Length: 329
Image (cartoon, rainbow, N blue to C red; front, side, top):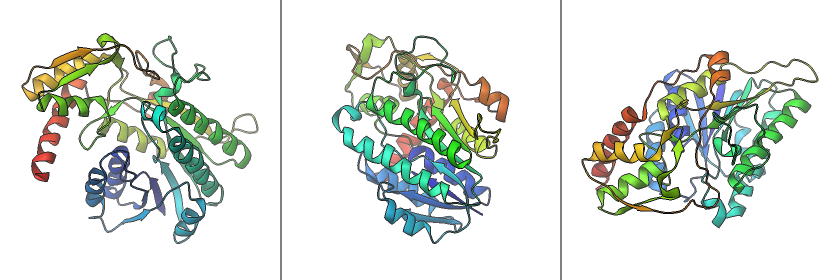
């Protein structure tokens, strides 16, 4: 059997694909290699995966449903789908909203239609986001809470994905699981994330722009813990329990620690051996003050147990960052 991973050249996608390949699985990776951030980083991730004989790569835009279906018709034994392709970023959704509708809504609909046509499909696991919680004040965030008031278009598209998946699980009875990611970081990460941009600025002697005057907290989740959780969930699809309980599930996937943004700054200062120059600014539109994941349902159901503290994960990212750019130059 074959596993399809979309967004395979992305941060989480590369790691999930690599773990599956190392386990001996055959994987088809799909990515359209958008230029939202440096394409050479995506190509470098992809180069790691292309070393595996059990990996096929297809450069495809999921919003082009016809091209995707035609290309995937060559693989008639796909039994699991990990859908990680998306237009990411809260702030960018204020500048380029149409790209979010194309990638996150039309692209996801393509995946749902594809899964509906797979007779041997065992499970669709897809990326949602902690952004769906919007301005919720009750912490930690629980999947039982209402998430019908998003504060960014990005969050609205991710909540829409969950609603779309529920309708397909209800109508066509195939198992779907949403994973609400909480601030993923680590080696091979995304340049648009704070830990990366802060590292870049600190090494260049530039001032760090700290929003909400530094009064921000995040549930920082190291990439190894994320990948462990994704694979545990993939092996444990929800059961179909009848008309009122379709095979549909939503989990938070985080570290279950809400740490101050300034702790991230201090960890980077220590790892880089520099002192930050800081500029404190008001909250940005679409952002939230704090995130904190209740992971008990995922811990109970699949044995998910994150182990990496921010103070341990940041040095690993810094070591990789220095090596990556040294090798590039």
